[in-house]
Image (cartoon, rainbow, N blue to C red; front, top):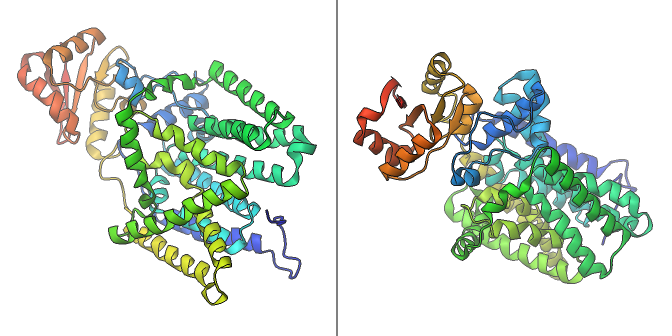
Length: 491
């Protein structure tokens, strides 16, 4: 490993790392700000994070929301509780600005840029020079998948920050030998971001698993650093479980289901192409195929010849994504893809060093090609307000009616109970997606549902609820409607 230490270049008065960091920020801040999309879509995750943050800001119990889990499937797809670190960071923003998406998105993007700076430090600690390190960070920060996530109020960027910080600190600790000579200091540096990563997303368990595997495989014996770090992590998980958040609730999302594993594998083999999601398909898949060969080859080379915690973390973070039995999603692979371009530029530099001097323009050529990919991502990314979401005027009209005519005793059944709970404070629940009238009737009676909301923009509502209402019009009394929503009272 390189003897590099982040700091000034001894041969000049310039600090190449400071220059690279400032250059990264000079690119990302205006790009992220000028492409920020107002509003949110209908995804319910953001509303639950905000509901938790509001509870923290107002001194209420963390998990106390009006969203009701009334179905086993709701517990899988719409959990009632989410990890607390992102809501804790969001709470001061809510306290200062209320339900205002703009400052919340600025926090999300600030965490993403902080993650990028940690990735730069990680690349430098692994031996990459400043320019390819900055290029790797820029390629990731301007990847199509990342550009699509930066405008959502979710915990992905929080996890990326703490996970990349943890990996950089572990590499620093090992490079300085503190894991051997000063194990307690090493644990003090590594354990907080490891726990904060877990408290951001449950996939943070992969960091602890990577430490365990690293100690078992690379060092082959228990060491004070590994033992104390893992015991400290376990104690932190227990404390978190007893106070804010129990990750065991996600256990029902990891059921033994071999067809789901095969489907996940096929889906995630295509996921590197999402790094160029804004680019035309020929360029997108060409770049994914060419870079993936270099990335996988470099990971294998480092695993065999110069293995660090990073090489072990990558499969540890990939494993839970592959065995996740619910639907796959490209953003679930971000904890692994954040390392993608670091491996790519390491592989390019390794190949360039092996080739004749006349062909050592390969790193520059790779940088140019990736720059073209970033530009096409920016040109192709979605812009402007979300066409559908809680800020559309028809939903505002609906909220006014709900606030005026419903009370806390009513149970409102809809396709998006978490968003309705956040905006109205009403007891809200999801419905079983079935065309069987008897099942729907039994559900309404069991839950004591008072009102049913049908949204014309939701295919499931049109497939399941609309036929039920049409078949039994005497059971559903329309009390409000506009071009998007119809609210029915259930006598």
